Image (cartoon, rainbow, N blue to C red):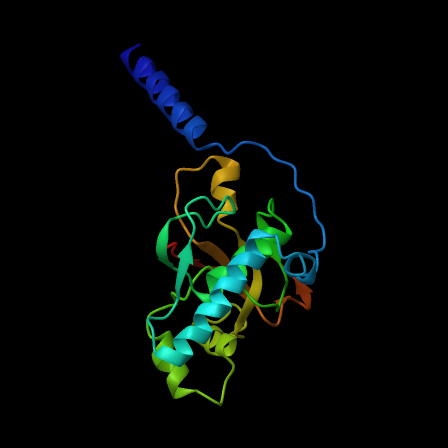
Amino acid sequence: KKANKKKQKLKEIESEKREDHVMPCWTMDIYEEPEEEDVLDDPNSDVAKAMAKYEKLKTEQAQSNAPKNNVEDDEDNEGGYGLGGRIQISDAFLHLQLKLQLAPHQSIRWQWKGHPLWYNNVYPKGYHEKMNEKKGEMAPIDVFYDMLPTCQRCGAKRTFECQIMPTTIFQLGMDMDFGSLYIFTCSSSCGENGIPTYQKCYIWEQPSE
């Protein structure tokens, strides 16, 4: 009897653990991304305003050698930039904001052999050193691919498949923090006996800071 009660208690604990980690069920819509010009042509859009400030600042930096990547931000800005004072915004982050303005509810971006949408300028250790070494020989994205582990089945380099956007954290109510999660798969789309089959992919997290 004691053994049965212990087993029952363990089952209850395991059940509670599973319930804590179960994600809510959502449906997903798949659609093409609108053109960037649709947002940038509107001078009143938040991204267009931020882009204008950023371009102005870069011009000032080129003339005065001022600190890079600082943008004067208004506290009453409702477009997600209202942090007050001068803040750090990279070209990558500004481009990501532009893409989010085009489709605010996007959660997953898919473009096999496409280009990742970087969250910031934080890359794997050794990336910038390798970039300097291969400058003029390889494109930045190829340098990044060169640093990833190759396909464990055929040995081919990996390529970009899709990414999980930071908006997913809010949409799913997760207690997590990441800039973006990037998923890379075999560039040869290899399989068994000529038939593509499922296999492990490689996921890299770009931190939010």
